[in-house]
Image (cartoon, rainbow, N blue to C red; front, top):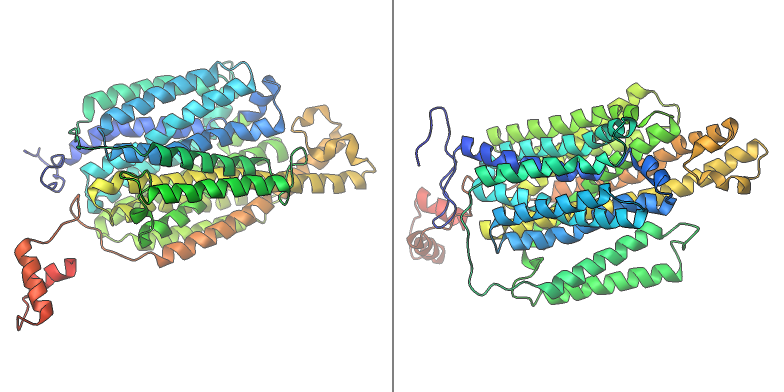
Amino acid sequence: MSTAPNEVAAPTAAAGDTPAMTHRQVLEAMVGLLAGLFTALLSTTIVATALPTIIADLDGTQTQYAWVITVALLANAASTPIWGKLADLFNKKTLVQSSLVIFVIGSAMAGAAHNVPFLLVGRTVQGIGMGGLTALAVAIIATIVSPRERGRYSGYMGAVMAVSMSGGPILGGVIVDSPLGWRWCFFVCVPLAIISLILLQRTLHIATVRKQGVSIDWLGATLLTAGVSVLLIWVSFAGKSDYYAWISKETLYYVGGGVLLLIATVFVEARAKSPIIPLKIVTERTTALAILASVAVGVGMFGSTTFLGQYFQTARHYSPTVAGVLTIPMVIGMFGGSVVSGQLITRFGKWKPFLVAGAATLVVGFALLGTIDHATSLWLMGLFMFLVGLGVGMLMQNLVLAVQNTVSVENIGAASSNVAFFRTFGGAIGVSVLGSILASRVQTLSADGLSRLGVPTSEHSGGSSLNLSVLPDPIADVVRAAYGDATAAIFVVAAIAAIVALLAVLAIPNRPLRKTIDIEEPLAEEVEIAVEAAAGDLPQVSSETAGARHRL
């Protein structure tokens, strides 16, 4: 393959793989991928600042408020491993285009929703498409770029993820405050997805690999989806007075049922010919630790964008647009952390220092956010959010990179998607659990504040309503202060999760990044020499052969 002037060709792929691509070709292919990824992730957060308006317009409840986000995360998390496994079996270009079509259908349904149940169906379809886009974008890049060079491109992907995840609330606020209305928070994703579909058709060229005797583990996929769904339903409703307490017979039923379904999933996956989650991969030390850290990253990504937007609107009484703008420091942190760390990893070949620094920064950022109240200086809020964004940016894609560096190219799709799965799963748990903690704390603080005013809390539900405009000003002020003070509690919990991520990252083996797309196997004669030398049949081993033994 010829290389244009000033272009650096990517390392040669192993025989039978997709031919190596130049830096320019990789960038061209990534345009469509990143456009699709941007659209998918944007749809996750764009509704964050629009939710109060959406739920009020559709006469929804507080529980439905949380489910607009949770149901999309659930569908995303449950479908991600399936898409990842399909990526190891079928043409990745066709799959990513299919996921875009599914996403467009879901976006159109959500935008046209006339009630909350129909909106939730649309969000579910959106989530299935989002699962494919997030899993396949990572898998496709992994098949065309070696781990050593991948840091640069992972940085680009991390930047897109950072802008879409943190920029969504800004765009959502602008749309809600504009004449377009909240429905365009969903409709805006349709043209972006169609543009991505066209770009992928023109720029992405991946050879189709057809394997004989392919089988899809539908039973494992069904059990996995059911187990995850039951547990997410549990964390979504537990602790709410209208449903059941954390410690109750309902909790026993949900948790017991979910755990049994997941145990059955492990049993099936251990015996399946083509498992959705290859246990050999996810139990490998690097992958297992990266998955543990990804759960905390999910809490940081989704928890921050969801509850900081609510904090600025409810506690600080800012408009949706201003609330979105106030999250810009987090956007800058995510963008800078992902791009700079990706470039430095490619330049120096060292990845672990950035993971450790990212996890430590995340701990500090969440701990500082755990000190805020309803009157905290906006400058301090900006600094704290920047630190959280910086930590997430350094962790997000580099955790995937660390995993990809330890698996063969044929398993990259499954390994990458499982890291993404647990990140989204952590986000879903984070939104549900942190939301329950927030609601409980708000109720307590509101009751205390209303008692000091001599107002019986039963008259105003202890601050359970988000429509504060209907309350008298003194009572509304009490509830706003309660939301502001209660928000700190959820970030203390997030800081604990970040500490777990830091410990996991510290324990990940610091393996050098390989410079080839696939894991190199030593030549047969080198293996024979190394075995003979190890047995003592050869008096000395040359430095070249020692290198072969080291690779073994």
